[in-house]
Image (tube, rainbow, N blue to C red; front, side, top):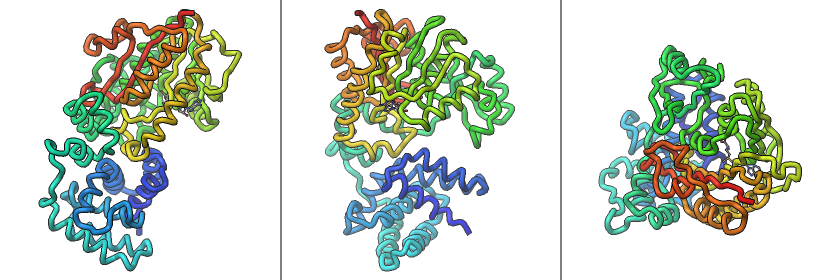
Length: 448
Ligand SMILES: C[S@@+](CC[C@H](N)C(=O)[O-])C[C@H]1O[C@@H](n2cnc3c(N)ncnc32)[C@H](O)[C@@H]1O
């Protein structure tokens, strides 16, 4: 007999303790247990994602009732406690006694017979006293308040507060906890938006218009993406509207040659190819065979004729590319803190030291690829993060060292997004402030 909580514990161990990506682990688990009914699969998803999204808050609660600090606990035990406390706090439909009993049983099953009493004691105390827990005060401990309320590491909220102020950061954190529809980009070269909407609705899928771009939609209520007919026909891509704005701001012209130096899984390259209506070419490059294959599969599924996927490390100079690109897209690897709403575990895996390494890599990539841009051509620099270090500071450094200038992006965006920085050449999207993921896009022109 399959035990759902054992599956959840396994997934949490892989994600939290083995540093595997949550979306990949969860996708694999759901594929492996495809035969479970919809309710069981939803339970697995909800408890795994919910525990990750609220992990620091769970740890805070656990530490009110345990003499042992969470960081000193056995890895299995702390994850049993986290997922159990999540159910106690956020899932009224599960009886407290069942949560406690299952937690104890799991500890025993994983060989921690001697810790049964500890797990039982902590969980029953939490169940009895949950509404008496005192949380950090917003006025007296603002950073700890943000960190515990929204389960966001303190170093992250501290750096955001310095940049955007407390109120904006609270909006950002809150938005990252909200459930959103899946954002899709209609492939208008294949068919009309109305036909896509009709096909989705025929399958019982709810559709809503996204802001900022007419061909961006939000969908809810599907089970598997691969079973959605319009997706199988290549009529749309899953892509956040922020990411669509990158290609809009790149604004390719008929016949342009585009190089996307960090392209996988290929969302922006496919969009550029779409905007070129079969003309020109998009070279989508990435660093691993696996990712390049993934892009090739997408090219074939959608039937794109003006795009190719190739293996190329962006930190290794490619002399054949010099001055080839009308448009060069550097959608560089980044800390990803703008997409925490979709990938909850990112916030626990990123550290200031890792971020410093990422910034070095971003600069190395820019230092290598800028020569691929034709004089007069465009370089788009983008990240899915919201701190200045990887965004504004990198652009400043780039402008100081290479023959490029920023160009206004106002001609390419809707009025709602226009502001001081967009006329200066860049856009910082913030979840909760904008209706999108957190994203940064800068448009630079090569001047000599
Ligand atoms: C932000 S993602 C790109 C997303 C992509 N542009 C899209 O829209 O689907 C960054 C990509 O950079 C790739 N990458 C990391 N280091 C790289 C390198 N040295 N050279 C080329 N690609 C690299 C990663 O494999 C990852 O796919």
